[in-house]
Length: 275
Image 1 (cartoon, rainbow, N blue to C red):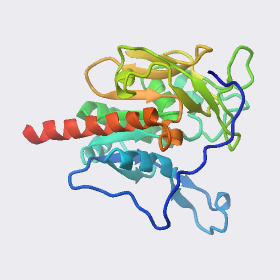
Image 2: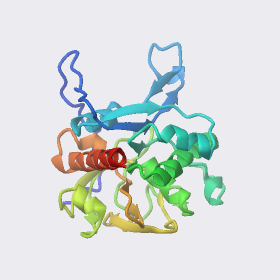
Image 3: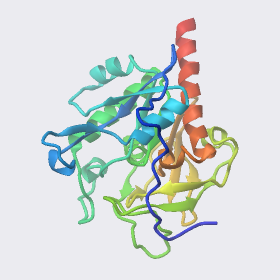
């Protein structure tokens, strides 16, 4: 049943003191886009922090992959391709809003945290991954970045609009559990183990408006919000607007998405070794 009310943030996964995820020999090495957190946003920290929510890395670890966090940096397409050539896959993570100038718009008052340099860095990584045949899993902001990279545009603020279910509020506003409709003949459906109506965790105030060139809508919310995209072609590239990492530790359906991504990384790794 679809919930339209904001719900509390997910409980952290139970962890033993000092527990760590085990890495295995030959485990796929996955590039995970990270963030620089200013010192004043981290309690008792006098220095900026390199960070990403541990849920991403833990979900990859449970799937048998190793995530390496990459901080934003200036790059061109050649350098991005050289870097991605050292990895077996790419996860584009959630985060602050894309610069609306990247899709030809001015920012509305609710748009926040834009950094065109970070957008350019992540878009270069995405292009390189696709050119190299590396699997890509794009989540929330990553889903929006993928759409814009294909020439699409975003609705800059959907929170509170009439006819919309609650998709969550950014910057600590919590999230909502929403039932999705997934296209049965999609990579996403296969990755989710055939589950076509998963209940997922959303917290986003922006959404896909104009769908980018060569992209297929493969998941929608009850209000029609685009929640899943896949490019045409044979490469394993899946984007979702929701946050599968938030609930993967307790929801096998969401963990399957990471498992399918990790397996695609292993398959591509094996294919390169044979070549």
